[in-house]
Length: 389
Ligand SMILES: [Zn+2]
Ligand SMILES: [Zn+2]
Image (cartoon, rainbow, N blue to C red; front, side):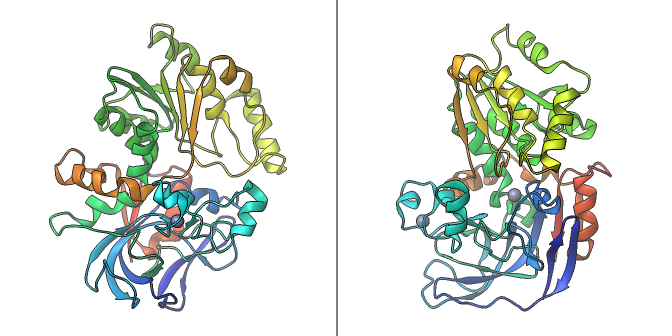
């Protein structure tokens, strides 16, 4: 089969690779109908995630048709059309039982690596380095899905592939960021980053009762999308002094909920930006936490800061004193996608949201290597790439 494979920094190639096979009786093989490139795939593309190996198959956002099931699989049959969550979860461990599927104890065969880096291992993730299990990803014609009774959700024929694809990650990820903040009706939410997760966070904030959402970015077409498609008030950090602007827009209090949907490759301004870029290049810090620092400073006293943006290692100069003094609550981590599949599928069926609103590029796997570059460089007004194998 054909698959997009990682060969090093800025080196993604379409390769001919062996078809996946059932290796555990709980596996299923999915023929991919539609797959996407995620903002977090760009951290792989840019070489910031360790333990990638030459030839690793990329991709954790995909949906398709079941073409083979292992003998123990109960809930799926050949021909079912499904969306697959990006974290892999066993369904039976302590964390799966408490709906913390991205923290599953049993789905990372390389748990020892993660334990060395993080103390404990999170769940395995499709196509996201050996630290996260070394699973082949879904930017391919076929993919093996472990624990097939636990993750994939069947989707009705009335919905198109584009309607449901983003249940695999970015819709639940934006939604969880707001859900875990327990926002109060009438509150103001600020979102750093108007990429796909930020856009879904804005939409979700309104769904969950926010009165005002303020979105921060510097890419004109993304700010336009945040304003016109998602209804946010927008700030461009190259023009507006963000901290002052946010104070002004919230009667001096700051936003009660701040969502950092940027992660380790934030772009900033001024001296601190040079500092971060130099230290990250020298591998003395693994992330450039510009947006995270700003969100801490902006957040209202007693507020909640949620971080769906991906961080991998160590960062510098985090204003922990500000967070402590203001009594902030931090929430972060990978998304417990399984928890949100049914409720968010129901919202799509009820037409409360059309998740395909942010797709700017409809391509094939052949276009993949070029699409990574276009997306990373934010060229051609690229916000979200989907590909048909
Ligand atoms: Zn993703
Ligand atoms: Zn588990």
